[in-house]
Length: 139
Image (cartoon, rainbow, N blue to C red; front, side):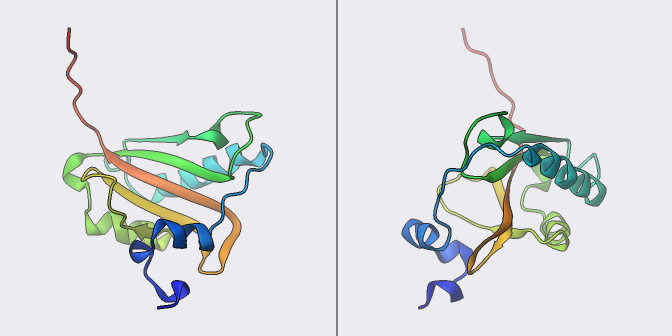
């Protein structure tokens, strides 16, 4: 089967690398504003009760640091909404593709935007939606 015709969740690591090769680039001042714009769009689409907190994470969030250029976001959502179809549909209206990948465990939803089957377009947004876990302190 041609890689371009496969669903994202069917791609192997090697096929991901073929479609979307990693290239390190210099820090771009626009990354912070691109994050803010996307954060605002997501906040408008999802309620504050759904998107409890949205953070810019990863190398593009650190001023002056070279990066692969993918803007990573982490969105905290209530655990009962994890894998909720209404969230998936809402994100799809913002041009995010829901990516199911094994190996991330049961507490993650991953969305991506800014690429097509021919490779990157202008920028790539990757979002991980994580249901907040209670952390026990141990002594």
